[in-house]
Image (cartoon, rainbow, N blue to C red; front, side, top):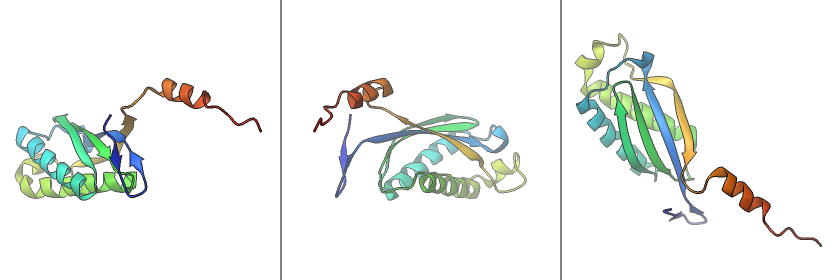
Length: 135
């Protein structure tokens, strides 16, 4: 487990995100996927996060992000989706126009789950096993 340090914290927060294309249209091609990887990695760097793993299919992408606690989760998602959508729309206008009438890329929804570290049952067991003060 990789642990990072802030000025007043030590943390290891890994999040798995899934972003789905609008109407689940199969618009993502190999060049778009490659460009998405670059754009999303840059957004992560600017927000003190790290893109650990990235891949996708023609209608969705997966990101594994080492999350920095200075961020607001929904603000990070907004930054990732808006920056990637704006750049992909600009660079692949003709391709996207065959799928969408308006300038869109992502569905408004997303999936996120915390991941890594010990299984939840082990953490619960550890918390329960603490020596509670009796006095």
